[in-house]
Each structure stands twice: as structure tokens, then as C-alpha cells.
Amino acid sequence: MVTLQYDPALLEARSDPFPLYRRLREEDPVHWSKALDAWVLTRYDDVVAVLRDKRFSADRARARNRLAREAMATAEEHGQPAARANTMLSSDPPEHTRLRLLISRAFLPNAVEKLRPHINDIANELLDACDEPGRMDILLDYAYPLPTIVIAELMGVPAEDRAKFKRWSDDIVATLGGGYGRPELAERAAQSGGEISDYFREVIAARRREPKEDLVSVLVAAADQGDDLSEGQLLATCVVALIAGNETTRNLIGNGMLALMRNPEQLEKLWDDPSLVVSAVEELLRYAGPVQCTARVATEDLAIGDKAIKKGQVVFPMVAAANRDPAHFRDPEELDISRQNNHHVAFGSGIHSCLGQPLARLEAHIAFSTLARRIPDPRLANGALEWAPSFILRGLKSLPITFAA
Image 1 (cartoon, helix red, strand yellow):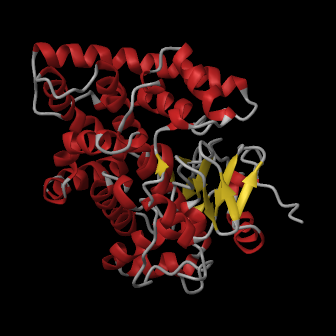
Image 2: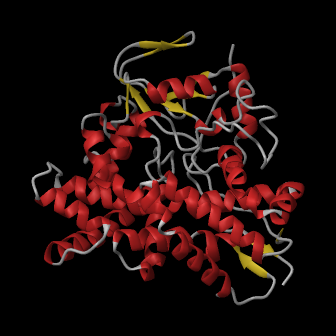
């Protein structure tokens, strides 16, 4: 009889979920979580299979899950655009295919590579701006502004508004998957959802008056030229692009630096040879990636292993657990920045694999190689680490370090 239970409200589900993932994978890999009112999958093969299976939908409106319905109702009540409008993240083909094609050209590898010199400049300018010799906050001074400036410029919104972007993004991400008994988080998310929607309504109106060479103008043109993109989808896509474009890379840099400082031999290896940054980033994505899971809805009755999944039930494929499955990774609990054939699923799998992964990789390559060149002997500063409340996107609120000035 299984007594183990996965509850995202528990601190360890955010601060260090990996021992729990390991136990679930060993004792109950297709696990019914009472707290989530959903299935939790922790084996690599099950996670990949669900992410590639057409019988599992990304459309949350198809869920019979109580928490999903409550989250949507709260968002809709406060005027959040993503409450009902389908985006790339919450739609299935052919809708998903059409929406993805609309913005894919901005994130093609060739287009992203052209940004390399500019991202290099941004990284160095952020380090130049750190005004306390030998001390900095990796997250607040570096990991947050770097991807935020880049995605803001791609979208054509002022990077100077990044303090507002951070507050809106933090509030909304805190309730991804549901509020889980914390109404104050839901209220803040609803408030910020309304504010960011109002912000993009103004941006969209401005682009209709005067189009520019940016992503918002591309989306506005698609909507206005009869591409069947609703006003709600246009707004929701802008919101999702801005948040996804900074949250994941920010937390990859923060989580990655924490992992390296807790494994000093690996940090020294990378700092001595920054050319290892490509394999290092792939390993940090596997070992400490920000995305813990995604969600799918069963569209028919089916089975996973020996468990019966009912139509309308929500399934959480835990990609972070899959990335430490010993059936697919040798010594999976060890950080090895030279690891080869690293087939992690940090960016998902199948048709919903992360569209922005070329940009995220480039930003991470530049972020870590620049730190390796310019921040000698980084160490954790004194003080307890505080993790953000989301169990879907795992990240720190701050990461103060000291280094040899």
C-alpha cells in the first residue's frame, strides 16, 4: 500500500524535490496526488510517451480537475487574457500549429545567432554595473535583467519597464498550476494579470497605429490580416512570450550557478575552461533545470503502466524527475558538465517542445562563459536561500555571492 504523497505545498517540493522524485519513481511512478487531484509521472519513458501522445491534450479547458477549474475561474474573474484564450502552451493541432508558426521565425537558430554580439554586450554591461566589489546578487543583478532585456527588445517594449515585468511575472508564475490553499497568491496573480493585460493593450494599439520591426507588430499584422487570431489570443500570446522569455532563462542561470557552487570541482572545471560551456549548459538543464513539469489532459480512458487514467483527468509529466532517471542517465544524481549524449527533456518533447530553446541556450552560454571570465572564485554568501512558491517553475528569489574582486 502506497503511503507516499506528492504535495506541491510542501517546502521540499520546491527547495529540493529530487529525493521525493526518486522515491516516487522507485515506489509509485504513476502516482495519484490527492493534493493536485491529478496523476504525477516520474519515469523518463512515461514522461516522453505522454508528451508525444495525441491522446493527451494541452488544452486545460478539457480538464475535469477541480484545481484547474478554480484557477481558470479566478483568472477569468480578474480579466486575465489567458483565462480562456488558447496560446501555443494550451492548444492542440491545428490551432497549436498555426499559433506556433506565427512567432517561430523570431526564434529560429539563424535569427537567434545574430543576437550573439548584442547579448554579449548586455552581459558585460550588467557586470560592469555591479557597484560593490567582490559581491553581487546573481539573480537580481544579472540573471533576471539579461533575458528580460533581450525578450523586451524582441517584442518591442521598453526594457526600462523590467521592474514591472518582474513583479507581474513573479506574481503570475507563483500560481502556475493553481493556488494550493494560498488565496493571497491568487489575488496578487490576478491583479498582476490585469495590469500586464492593460499594458499590452496599449502596446498593441500603438503597433496598429505605427507598426515596427518587432514581434508584437508581427502578431498584430497576423490578427488584422484575417489570420483568425482573436484579440484574446493576441493579448495572451504577448503576455506568455514576455513571461516565458525571461522566467526560464533567469532560473536556469540561478539554479545553475547554485549547482556549480555546491559542486566546486565542476565549477572550477568550467571556470578553467569556458569552452566547456555548451556541454555544461546541457548538464545544468538536466540536473537543475527550472521547469519541473508540465500538464496534459487525457482525452479518453487509457492506461499508463498498471494505472487506469480516466478521460478528463490531468497528468503531470515531471520532466525534472525524468532527467534523473537512472534507466537513461548514468549516475543521474551527479553533476558532470562533460556529460555526453545528454538526451534530457528540460525543454519538453514532441510538438510542444520549447520554441524559445535556441535563444535560451544562447543566453545561457553567454551568461555562464561571461561569469567564468569575469567573476573569479564565486562562493555563496551567508544567508538562507528562499525559493519561489511555484512547483512548476523552480527558482530562487535571490542568490547573493562573494567573489575575488
